[in-house]
Length: 380
Ligand SMILES: [Zn+2]
Image 1 (cartoon, rainbow, N blue to C red):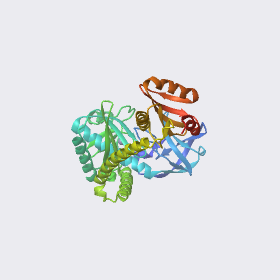
Image 2: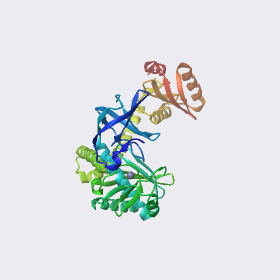
Image 3: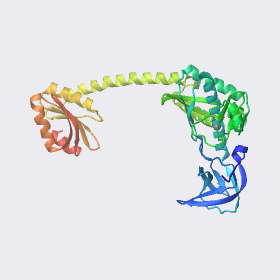
Image 4: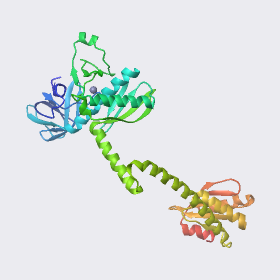
């Protein structure tokens, strides 16, 4: 590799000058190799940095065949000196969340002996997997201890030990690490092999917050937000809670109870509405004009139509149908004596495209046709 890794020497370099060593063009994308870079290439579960090189957008940085390639939208020329700017707010949030992951993984390893077997940092969230299971009390304990390590503002350092030194250091390692081992040490907390940039003191993380967990591949996946991720999440949740409180005329600390009360009221309204609907259906059946063979109900579900057809048949005899208009035609339920129902249903199927069926004295489904034609058929 020809490129000097500035991001390893100092994770806080956000702008720098570099010389362009070479440029490749592949599928319309320019891939530049620089003599030095502060752009972190994707690796170890962390996305690559983005930013600008001489005003041209860099939207990806990758190590390929041992070279660090900066994917740029505009062409750079070999030999050119360029001014580079890393999107540092984004990168800093990654540094906060990545360092927090080391603290949590180190504490989990010490307390429970579980290994971190998967780590992914997205633009807004950290997910990581352990090969063991926790009780909720244990997770609370780890989260609490991790935040104490943040507030203690411990130092974070990275170094390349010699092969002999490495033998004597008890460090955690992730799968797939090749070549020279770079160790990241958090004072009194953890030593782990890692290639990514981290904050230099844990206080910069601000807060470590577990959001949820799920069982995954015989272990536990933790969803976590720290630093800037956590602040934005808190801002959004605060705005959501305020909006819900305004709708419910509740104080923020009473919102859960207000939603429970609303849910109970809704259940009781549903029961009232059901009673009223069946009362209304009873009246409609009572007032039904028996010279017709169908009753039209608005926005009715199949089970309502079945009740109506059953009620009409029991009250007036003969084949009786309940209909409800749909975009394609109508939903229907038809009820008749068992000796007649199949013939009535066959007659309907010969006239219209009908989907559905049924047993005993009932047939139900949908009719695809102009609704006026359907009404005409039933003499409504
Ligand atoms: Zn790391």
